[in-house]
Image (tube, helix red, strand yellow):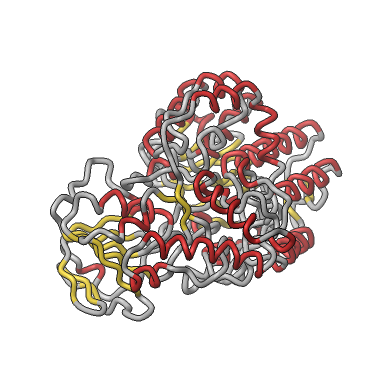
Length: 535
């Protein structure tokens, strides 16, 4: 893009051109603010640009995982499947960018190296691999799952075969036919990849550290009658979603397993298994909070795994022993069935850890000769995209240092010591424990309204107070402490990264969060400090 002086000194710099960055740009342009989006890839789309692995698919129904800010867009776009695949979602995001003429304000192949707040001018200085920018506001739309976790395994860098990552899958078609393939990890991306690649390869060796609960997606072509019904009442439908705990339509319900007949419960769970996907908990409000109720749902899925997987020893390895939902629930198409194939082998890393990776092999309980190694080892979730950069606030404070003992944010939107900096779906917001699309829209709308309020009220600097931030994160952890989430090791609390502070980061409860956000906003952005040049 040909940078003019105005574009090097915009009102706002947005980092990231995924779902959040695209909509944030649209809103700010409509306000008349000069805005530049910096995107390190040569394409927009964020997660849906990078994650091109076989079987990559959204685990939220297509009619819910879509923008709602424009009625024409909602009505005109038609999804081909109940759960959209990566190519279709990327096509959708490109359509949105073109429809609203956003592409010209996105600078591609431009990676942010440093963002530094100048206390004298109250401006952000942003250094990239190409240019230096100066802007009043800096907005990070870098995503919650965007920095891969590379495992520290002896010999990995010496592997001479084909090395792939689900997080950065090649754009060109990858031919795995008749190859011996190893995949490390059994999280969501692996659970989607394994059934797809097992069909074409010679042998697949699955190295599992922790088994996962997974529910069948029962995906298929979009039901046109369902689509027409929802499109006829889209606003009402979206409101229904927002009133549920996790912001998903099928996840509504106020019944309690503890107060229900067990046969009725199992009948309902059977229905949920067949049709609800990620909304498997649908109908029961006590699964996330009551360990006994949770065990009923967990046992239901464990028994399903035993029914599906023919080899009892393999089935036992695949059965999770922790609370269901404590780690992110997965949705699959034939995942457990894949382990009935003669060319698929499961290696349990708890009993047989990987000793080393050779030039063409991987060694655990024995040495496996492999042509291809796939890393599906997860992400430095929630914070990785922010701590991997040099983000420098007041008094030279670097964000990664401030978060060394655990990430703290006010509402997932503002961070003390970092004025005029906003994060979209940051730590302390529902983010990954919600339907990300409406949660992103909620944050973008809030940031836009906040900047508009500042302009109307002649405010030039906004910063969350340390006291508000501390109080908010205490609330996040207090709520989490009432649930099964706090007692389960997961990437929600940084347990998948060895040197990361262990703190629970998402806010649990979409409706409660929405109420809190409204209350704080209506009190003139209570908890935020305005126009303080130095503290």
